[in-house]
Figure 1 (tube, rainbow, N blue to C red):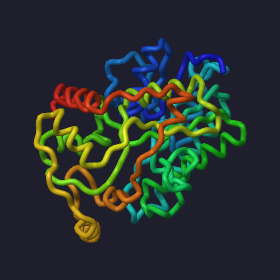
Figure 2 (figure 1 turned 90 degrees about the horizontal axis):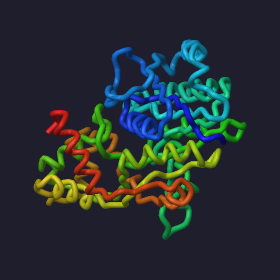
Figure 3 (figure 1 turned 180 degrees about the vertical axis):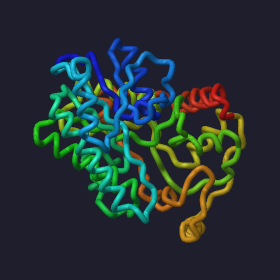
Figure 4 (figure 1 turned 180 degrees about the horizontal axis):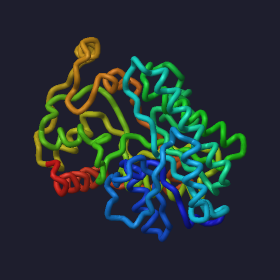
Length: 333
C-alpha cells in the first residue's frame, strides 16, 4: 500500500478516535472527521481537522457527503478510514434490536468503503471478541474467538457481530484490518467512556476489589497502533492492543498510589458478587453488565501487535498520571 496521506475518522469525537486524530496530524496526514452533531468536537476542538457531518445509520446521506468530498478523502491507495465509532449497547431488554443496529451500521461503513475504493479500513473492535485460549496454559490471543451468546450481554454480542462483518468483508477482498484494544485509559476521555473507575480509585472511593484479571493499555499507544495498522497491518488479520496484564487489585492499587489515595483493602467474594448481580446493584463507576461479564475478563497476549505493528506499551503509572492531569485540567478532579 502507498503510505497514507489522508484519513477519515469515524468516531473522532470519542476517546480513541480523538487520539488517532492527534497522532495522524502529528505525522503530517490530512484528517477529516465525521460527526453527527454540527457542534461536537469531543476532546479535539483545538485540532485543525476538517469536520464532516453524517450518520452511520443513513447510508444514502453518508454517501452523498463523501461524494462531495471524495477528492480529499479517498485518494487511491493512500486513503485510510479509521472506524472507531463503535456501538455501546448495555440494555439486555433491547439486545436483539441493538445488535441488529450495530451490524447494519457496520455494513453501511463496509459498503461505502468498497464503493469509494479506500486504500485501507482499520476497524476498532474490542477485547470482548477474544475468547478463552483453546489450549490450557497459554495467554489468549488472536486465534481465540468469542463464542456468541456466552456472555449474554448486548455489548459483547454487538462487538462480535460487527467484527464478523468486518472479517467477512476482508475475505471478500476489502482491505480491512481489525484491532482489539483491551481496557483503554489515558488523557482525552471526554465522554468518560472508561475512566470513571479510574477517577474513583484516584479519589480513594474504591475501598474494595473483586477477584478478576484484566489487561490495560494507553490510549495514545492504541492510536499509534492504528496508524501502524494503516501502514503495514495485514489485511484480514486482527491484532490485540494491550500493554499490561493485571489483577483488579493491582490495577486499583497502582492508580491509588499515583494519586496518593488509599488503596482498596476489602476483597469481595464470588457469593457477594452473585448477590449484587441478582439484585441489580451497582459497583461505583460500573454497572451490573460489567459485573456479569467480569468472569470473562482474562489476561491476553500482545505479541502479534508488538511484532508486526511495533505496538508501544508505556508504563501504566505514566498512563494514570497523564490521565489524572488531563482530568484536573478539565475540572474533573
